[in-house]
Each structure stands twice: as structure tokens, then as C-alpha cells.
Length: 323
Image (cartoon, rainbow, N blue to C red; front, side):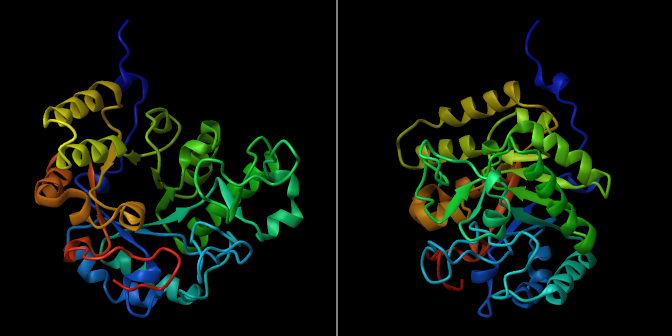
């Protein structure tokens, strides 16, 4: 019997998500103020672009131990239940979310489940929740230069319970509409099944996986990154692959992925901009074609903050560097 993901992975999508566009906000860089209020002031502009989902990069306090740069990476979370005072407070976050909802926008928070900052309170309160290397020391990720974080151990039931309750907190208390889950493939898939059940008991949520694995759709995600689409477009733009490379991507995507699964297509995002360059540097003369295909082709298009204005510079990742 032929493999048919469309039958194996029935995935109902919310009606509001049909033909949606997602807009990514780096609060630190989005406005001159670098605050939630600075984002709130521009929500009408974002909605006017046709966006339906507002993705806020991590809003939590940032670790100080082994911090990178002056302000650190927002993905080195010091406290999952608190707000980075650099951005504002609970009141200003609530104003942002309430105004977004009034404009018809859904708000998803960026969540970092795979690792925390070295000085997260969980390190001292629950050291058993962290992965260890062969010497018994806390383990930064071996794959990238992530020396400012240490990885969790999802074999620990207590960690799973804590993480689910922490994610439920923001849904219950702030009425957010879902999460973008950082490096989702580094977390066991069965955790995502647990999370989906727990969050949907509160309200239906939208989950975006920063990963490219069709099984994540079976385990609770509405949308995953179309990294392969971006890579195909980049190779074509750089003259490293024929245009037929794109046809092969669409064929693979149609045959191997659940029909109802959303795939996020993007020309730029915070990672691509910070480490690979502006959209112009990446795509050159093919930029306009890449943008058009990201919107008109299969998938849900992402607008990286500032992309609509030309994205003329690489934004610093560890410092204040307003668009």
C-alpha cells in the first residue's frame, strides 16, 4: 500500500487560518523604543499588510551568565513566567494583545523548550531536568555556537509538566493564540502530543514548528518551516541549481506531506537576516520573484519585520539595532 500522509495525518485547521499571512516581530529592533508599546503603535500597519498572525520573538528575561553581546540572545531564557523589562510589563503586553485581537490578528509567542539560560532558576531548583555530557556537566548544544544556553532532558516527567504549565499560563492569563516552538525537532514528539491536548483544553491554539518534519504535524503542529523551499530558491538565485529544483520541491511537498499541513515559506527571517544577510544579499536579482513565489506558491508566507520596507540591513542579534 502506498504511503499517503494525507490519510495518515488528518489535521483540521482553524477557519481563520485559510489564506493567512504571518508577520514576525523582534520587539527589540522593531521600533525606536524597542518596547511592546512600540509594536502596538504599528499594529494597524501590520494588519494592513494582510497579516493574520503576529509572531512575537521571545519576550522573557534573558540570561546574564555566558551572555552573548551586551543584551544577549532572546533564546537564552532566564524565566519562562516573566517578561523582559526591556520590553515593558504585563500591562503593556496585554495592551498589545488586546489591540491585535481588535484588529483581527492572532498572537503567537516564540517559545524555547529545548534549552534555557545558564542562570535560569530551574538550574538550581531542578538540576536533574538538564542534560549532561559524559563528564556529568551541563550540556550546551553541540551543533551550533550556543554557549549561552544548556539543554533540557525531556526524559524527566517533572520537566514536561512544568513546561506544559508554563505554556498554559500565557494562554490562560494573556489570551495568546499559540506558539512558535524553537528547534521543535530537538524535543521528543510525544511531548508535543501532550502539549496539544493540554492547551486545547483551554482554547484552540495555533502551533508553528521551527523544524521540517512531517511527523510533527501528526503530533500537534499546524505549520512547519519550509526550509527546503528557502534552500531551493536560494540555490536557484545563486546559480547553484536549475529552476527545475523548485518543481522537485513542490512535487516532494505534495507527495510526502499531509495535505492539510501548512508549510511556512519565507525569503527572510531573524536567523537568515542576522547570519546570512539581507534579502537582497541572499537573492540578488531573483529577490522579487522569490517574494512573489513565497506568497503565491504553496504554503503560508512569512513577512520578517522590515522586509516590507526593503530590509536594507542586517540587524544585530545581541544589541539594540532598530529597523
